[in-house]
Length: 178
Length: 375
Image 1 (tube, helix red, strand yellow):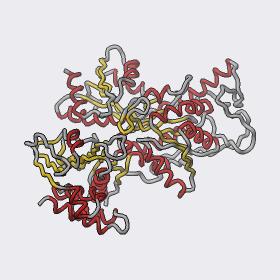
Image 2 (cartoon, rainbow over the protein chains, first blue to last red):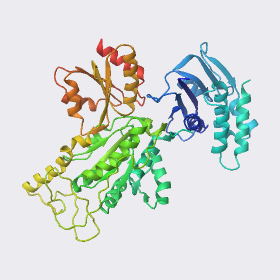
Image 3 (cartoon, rainbow over the protein chains, first blue to last red):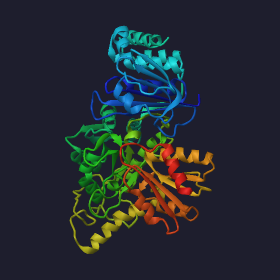
Image 4 (cartoon, chains in turn brown, cyan):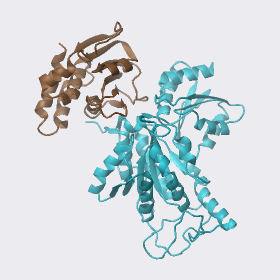
């Protein structure tokens, strides 16, 4: 890996800013890489289309927004419509199969529609865990961070009494795409 | 485990302020700067330093000025709308020669504008936002380590020159979580002039170019600190000769120390045929563009201004002796380009890349502008 670009798209409140922050923390503090996370959101506290760009590289990142995206995960139609620019050919695209219905032209990407939000509610027990589920999907599909570092970091980061549910969320994320 | 940490730009500012000795913060939260106040409100009480959330931005800077006169190192943080409200007190701090650091994390404007979108449109407001002729210092970092070092430097210059120092950032730099290596205490200079006991009531009396001494407001003698033009004692005076001297005292403490105040970075300028002039987030787009241009054999270089005001005039003019094209890249409809145009000799071609729609320039957009310009 020399330079890897990830974009999360969602609506405000779905937890992607947390997912991005976790990913950057793991990449820098546990793996010694360079990384930056730039959120773009609206003035609405909840419900506005949001994106988070995460750039991870072996050297200092100059421009902090994504320009050639390797991995795009999106859990709502509106951010999918607005933010699916700058994707590379062969980019991996993960969409929530219930909430992103109109995919448009996807010929150049590898698209995986999966029920992220639903499985998070049912499998992990709480929709607030979408951030950790998304992180686990990212790990599995890209290897941009190691599985072990992700688990260690989440154990360290999770508030007391929530470690078990966070571990469950990782499991949900790892099993969503076979 | 790496030495480097991930911190939000705003948090780097807050940490650097505390490292520089900031022991009083008064502010009113506003996107995209709120995390600075949030962090200070958590950390300062633990360090027995004072944090106050004020009723608005006017009061915030007022409180900082008062605390500064009492010997504190003070800071407030805001964004465009709050910075507009602070302008009256910026003038007060200049006139009364009070050190204070004012952070403005720029967002789309005017008015409430676009709270969550970046802009670089308060460049001239930083210079001329308050009325009257006055000196001002403004700095604008772009990379994570610079955010730390320029914040510390802002405090040092405020203390040294007894003047407000404006620290500019933009929404991208304030909000992004980035890898950063926070330097060890002791590895950077922290300027701290001890409060002087007053021995002479003429507190403003000094030679032109000298810095005023830190005044201990609450001990010793009754002194007068005023926004009105004043004499060496601080009492109101409109005597033309006195006013002339006081104006020069305030101006020259800054303009006779430009070597200390002006800071910039240059990339690939040695053999460049075109200078990209930029700062903040746009300088990061420009640096990425210049690197790609070099790979494609285009001789472009970047002049990244860290000190915005006073404008790095001499340094840029020196470059213009050899390099005859300059492209100004900024997220506004044209502000610093006027400074560039003002100082560039007639034989230098000037071009701009301007935009104020909340979207930072991509490196490709800057690269295309460079290519178009050198064609």
